[in-house]
Image (tube, one colour):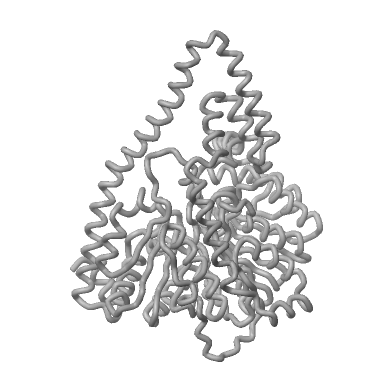
Length: 539
């Protein structure tokens, strides 16, 4: 028996020899599949994409040879594209980037603009998502008692919830307990314990699933529960299929009795469809318990494997009525990939009659298909309403003009705005872009700190000892504009003090960014940041 097999057998009660053999065989086969993906499918993908781009550009230039005034054609194309960008329905931040792209690359730039703004390959997805939202938006109505409480005591919560509800069916709940986990290491054993308690169904929706100790431990429980007759569903993003898992992984899980879907599998054809990734992390157990936060199902998230130093991540566990919103988000994502779900069957809350004295809890989702940018606007709402402090943890700080203005305005009003970012980055370009915001924010009074032990993957905002958001939403363009995201907004819940205490403890392990540190940045990082900032909205 291998070391991994011995550890899993020792630490996972109730995992018998036959089930262990099935799961470990799946792991071994998947490793072989990963090699096939890396050395064949990825290469095929790259070649076909380059071939398609080459054909498009080649056709354009071939036609130019027969036009006597090619230069004039270039000018006309650039002028037309510029007028379209300036007057078109494009978010303000990307407009300058698109103008630069079209000016430097009039042929390929215009082609890219046409592909993106005509939503090539994406219209069907958008229509399907809108249909699902329309069918399910009344599944969880806002209770009158909670509405009355907000009207009388929490008017700011009422206005925010009104906006959020327009993007889906996300009511505010009172009777829900929230537990905050400062690390993935803290969440993991509780997560396993709750999975073992499952009696009806288990739904998992994660951006990343990567084989190792964490996923192996979870998978063994899922296989056992499926064998017992429970409904087990797993959904992961298609980028895993390209880099981490074999193409036929859903079929392999099906052999264990687990239903599995891949969100938007990446294929070697040009389409904006692949730009919208499912970045959510949702776990629902029996409709009673739910988890979300930054933690994916991979060993670095529980610090069992070191990638970029110590991995700082966070999560929350919901117990109570608010879990229904996480269940709805999962079912909507599942339905987006074909098939209809019996929503009523899963959205029943099995109320045991226990009253949970707590504050207000609002789980919400954000979709890139409705153009509402819910996640960014929730963060901006907190910044604009804050009176004393706003403390933020984020792995990426790649801001559009509106968010940068909101941060500076809050600091200018005298609010203590502090941001913790990684000290050891996972991506050089993202880190260079983050550093590119340092000078402007610090000059405005925002304080920035780098987490020296390693990488911060937490997505946390806490304000004035009464409001907090924990979820999957980064302070970057991809989260605000291009990803399916989710989070839990909390007001007056008992765990908010824990969230703030965790921020202050994490701050002790950080170095503050000051003028000297900014000046000492390596020249290559400064240049990279300047160049990358020009195309940041398209990244």
